[in-house]
Length: 524
Image (cartoon, rainbow, N blue to C red; front, side):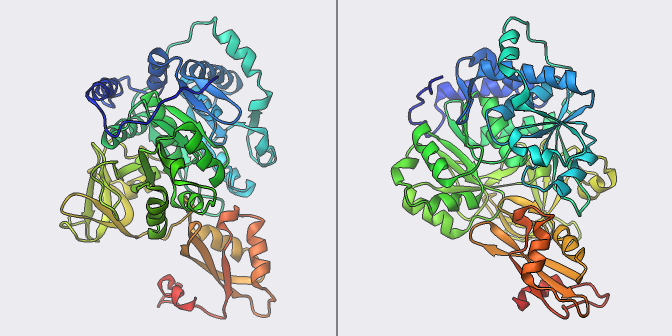
């Protein structure tokens, strides 16, 4: 099908669009007892049937076609498994939203799976979620063979025939879903750390979509670029759910390529782009990219990891695009704050979006004043339902008053703009992905020549952060950096393999013998 021409997007909502948005916002209000994510797709089918919903290099779907394909996947899930959860091992594509909404239509919880992980890492996640069915593409066939669940491959399904048959069938009503029913489970851990699934309810995701739309002044005439993997909450909400809530168009690039991404922006008239800093950095380094390629951009938001000044300044100087930072976590669906197209303060991550509260507290939990650094607390309808099957860990981070303790350190200025100044947690963010040092340490320590390992993060121009490992070898063991990196590569995803392995006879420790990681940077 042909691509509709959307022209240059408006720089702000005019009265007609504002009224239309407010009407849609009322329909999608998270306070409705019957509110659910599928409502947004069915509303887009009614009001935007012929509008291009999502397209990739192989498939383009209007909103009518997207809903028909979602219905087909609904039938697949109902017939293939009685499990209330379904695994999705799919890239950013036209198929993913159809499968996701098919899960919702079947009354199932979707569990998007990280295809960047190894089988040893993904297997415990599939087991923890209790999955017996995973929908995947053949590209991931080898990985699927190592999972404790049956796989149905998209390529093996008679989708065209089933979609044609569905045209003469009456589409069933959405299932009865309460706002607090779990919509998706997103896992934030890997093989050697205990898998931890974040349960996001329909209310969490729905409210985050609606409140982000209102706070960022985006509407259905915008065209989105999706270059984020859908197992990442940033990609799931910003590039899948938000566009459907608007009835907007998404152009997906299944495998990130800076050249392909710049080409898509230029040729498809992309006006909203949301990505991680390393992706923006790769586009900035693309020699063929020109300023005119980005002329249609209305809003470009960077999130998932700190945005280097060189990338932000370079994008504005070379392409005339101001990269605005946002802040969020998997546990907050994810958007907490974001820099809107108007009223943004550089160096901050914007203001908290509508209906989301942010507080800054000291180690004793006392509220701090403006301009003071402390732990960031978040409260609102976007805060997760909890960690799947882990009520005690849930209570550790969500207090009795509903505040989610992020473990991040930041400050609010006099104008209400939030800045992130550090992380209380040891977790690393590598290319936008959460990585726990203990995962890497345990793998290194599994080598017979290693007695102890400690991993920290260092700044990396390409990925934001990169892991560096310090290793104490067994007495008399002949181990070197190459051997240990190869050992890690057999078990861990590539981005988790240490950038550098430093072998030492001892490491700085405290009174109890615990390695003092804060002193490890001195050894670099």
